[in-house]
Length: 67
Image (tube, rainbow, N blue to C red):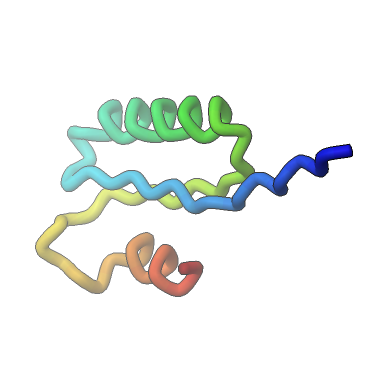
């Protein structure tokens, strides 16, 4: 009998630069979740509204710590 390989646990990261782009953030998260569900992955979502210029973003640092 073949054993099914365990599905990976992944971290989904979504970011936009400004509060005005919050709807885009929701769309990013939705699309990432759809893809992860399609793949059968377990996942955690990290999202934030922060400038890409700032390298000390909370969400980015959380992502880097997880990986």
